[in-house]
Amino acid sequence: MKKLILPLFLFASVSTMAQNAMLKNAAKGAVSLTDAENICFASDGTNVVLMAGDKTGLYAIDITDNKIANEKDNTLTAPIASFVTSKLNAAAGQAVSVVDMEVNPVSKAIYVLAKAGANKYLIRVESKGAKVSLVDLSSVNYSKLAWTGTFELNDMAYGNKTLYVTSGSFSLDGEIGWIAPPFTHNATVTKRSTTMFKSNWGNKYETAAPLEVIAFGNVGGKNRLMGVTTCAPGFSVDASTLSGSGLLSVTEDFNVNSGMSSKAVFMSHDKKEWLFDLHDNNLYRIGKKYLDGSQVTANKHNQNAAMLRDNMGKVVATLPADDMKLMSTTAVTSIAQYDNYRLMVLEAGATGALKMVQMSSENPPPFTSIGDVATAKLDMYPNPASQTVTINIPENSNSATLNIVAINGKVVMQRELNTRNTTLDISTLAKGMYVVNMILADGSMSSGKLTIK
Image (cartoon, rainbow, N blue to C red):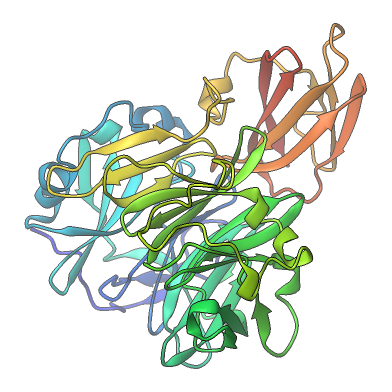
């Protein structure tokens, strides 16, 4: 069996082949994931790279899996029972455990970072689970991104054409970094030191309190980084405040009350914004009220932050479901975002199933797949567009809700339309393909593909 674990560089050279547009001056060689603890994807809607990291820096890897045409075939339509034992162990040739899991936003193939002892494996799941194979990283195009000083990767999130990275530990001060594509080989990540308020650490700000788990999303019109820290104060930072000098003070905006968060995913559906927190093998949904910065305005942050779970680890009984809700009915090992409405969920244990789980109450959810809207009709022009696009409401309607969804399933723009013709500024959106959904007052919906050039 061909092992994935390889030397970090194996005759590495600058690649002269056709480049993935997410990379610049990429090298070609071997990349090892031996010390990687998490993965994420970065994409412009057409090109995609896998992000991983170790103590030496970050890697943007061209895994040559960017065919939108594969989306329907790869989308899981039925649970895969005993996923680890029946699929992953066979691919690795030995028993493995799951470290992290992500869905390729373009092809919708599932990628699993798995380990067995000191070995790590990157496994790709395609064709609705019928094809499971190791990803060969012995000769790939990649860009290595430098991090000045000691680097202890905690988590990564991609959004608003930016990769966000957090570093730190109990013995290493927290830092947050960011870098935009194309990812240039040997470029240095811009970063800033952080200090986090921890009510569980004596009600004070601590520099050795890194932002362990992060997700990116747009809440109330502002791009934000949000997540949960150890034991378990949560935060939501306005991304526009990251640039600057000195310590970035991060407030405690809510508290999940003890335990550890292993992954967070932001989703926007049902006309609301949510943070999904995989916490102690339970999946929780945290509402907009704790994500939009209003807790700071109302002085309900830091030592006054709301506890979302009681001392027994149960959701506080008096909280409405829009504030905090337990979403899982069985123990969960890992989650990955499929689109803005559905999560890939891996149940715990040897017999745990991998399944697609709908998180929204909308039935069916709005179109989020480029393939799904092949026959749907929406009156908009010009298309392709670059600066603006005009949307027309049907003559028998006076208003509508419109959202524009990126290929990774995230809503990148949402507007209430109250005139027959509305022109939207799309100049800040990345080039690529999008799904545009218009939901009328009677609940009917039309959708269409929009190409931004």
